[in-house]
Image 1 (cartoon, chains in turn orange, blue):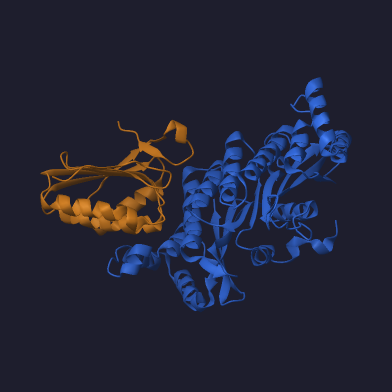
Image 2 (tube, chains in turn orange, red):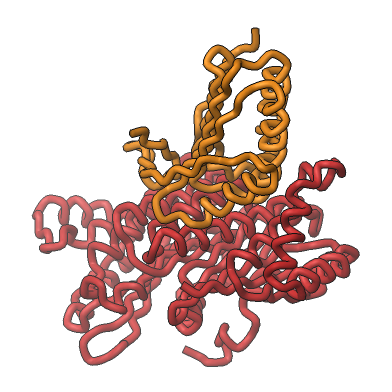
Length: 143
Length: 379
């Protein structure tokens, strides 16, 4: 069995949850990583491993507030892996974006279109964690 | 003030870059000083100084003086809330050869000048023993002005720096003047070979000129130092609090800043005069609704041609062509170098700013050139 990945978010790196049991993946927050490849590489490995024996349904959520271009490339790779996961699991992808953040919506649409993934787009409020206000650590507020 | 010392006449920032060594710092912030901003402004300076090879005791003194200085701006600044004058205040710190120079500038009412002058002249006339006695006397008689403080902050600054305060008062109009306050701190511990500050450019006169320069050019912030991810995050925090406007334009500017600063971090690591580091300058100005962001860093002279070609190419593309070019590269996982390094930064900056990229090279010695790139963003 693949272990659950649980990475806490920081000022410049996203929060990651990858749960095999639930067939659930969520990446959210800010991704301004200097070494984006180093951060995302273990995530590819997890997804590749998961793809071998996936759950019937896989729920995937992206909720970025910001990402830099080095991360954009790594997200492209991740989304590509997710698109091949479709062969063995029913994949639902939700792309959360902050209210009025049209740029982030556009980025999601680009990934969705280029890989024919049919993202569901969800406009939402993002809440800064109280002690980290202004520090860019955000959480998606779930309805 | 002599006009031959006029910074604005030269390409000030290029001069600055050429004249500063890798360990140097030139950091100036102009604008509002809310509680939140004060914290971010100080944090950037602290992160920079924290790395310096000077004693912890001296670091503490420097931090202490920084805090006193920045509080002086909000405590004694007489600019009316939300007035244009309010954003003319500045905080700055420079360092060179292990000497630290902290300067602030703010508005004061002309009728307070005499009192301030006599306070400063009195403090500057005392030796350290007399200063201690004076400090206790002021502390004891509790003559606190309505804004808190009877010059205690000023006395503290002299006690912590061990040097007299320099100041300059420049009349703005019949009601107000600019008040410049400047401290020198020696970062060299006893026993080390002393380096005299003599000949340092960072005097109060220099700062008056620099202030004029940033006002004339609507500059909000200049940061000339070694760049890393930490300083990037501090700079972002400052600008996040400093900017007004809608979410989209704020996010656009922040994203462009991240790309520009990470370009310095990724490509600006050079060895000049035997010292390695990502030395660079970032500055940002705001003029009639238009933000202008500039970075300067060293590149190998041999890389000049390729970089010029790349930017010219990006500038020559239509929006649609650029979009295709970006997407093509976004999904190019084949070349390992391209995959790990991205190489999308300049295209993204051009896309987000919606204005052509402006750039220039300046040759220096040792096979390196200075690369200056400017982005304009209309909001």
